[in-house]
Image: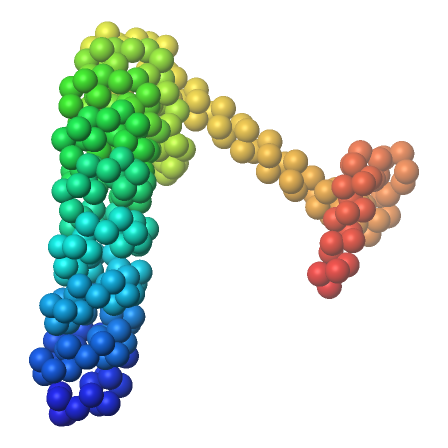
Length: 286
């Protein structure tokens, strides 16, 4: 293939953007060809000419497709608030390539950590200890708790946001919070505990709690008690949802066996409105 032929290269990069890197310098400086490449694969911006990597429209097209393409933009555009925010909407980690000024911008950093919690690592020193920013990062990615300062790992709301995602993260909380009965209890009933496989033991954060709480008999029984309550609730909900169908089936069986009558039939025991709704739904389905 002739890599200095604009028409041929344009047709290729529309399908495989990064092949722009094989084109001649003249073609890599062609705005139309580069736009076609970055619209297909943002990281193709890496192979554009320096002039086009400073072209706002070209860079915006690249970061809209692939936020990390911000790495290849000119220094001026990496300090452009709109360009950076556009990149962060696509990929929070792109904060790494933003200018120092924007890494210290609260709105920009919040947009990044809400997309990717560990983008907190690329924020300014001041914002890395900002409670609102940290809380947003932990809510997006609980494991961020592991890299926070001792002060923030002693913050009840921050720790609860983390253990609601993964109760084993209690191990990164301060000693005071690991000895707090309410915090440990919240960790036990976190959504993590709701995703257990019944073939295995229900996950519990108790090994990460203080020694006193580990030996607390009521807390040791709490996971099993809570599991049983959840199962009871699930079965109750299933029965409520299946009740119309169940009574419809019972009524048909009774009619077929000749055992149905108004006094003992299933129709006397079921909810008439629910049954009629089920019958109507079944008729539509057929």
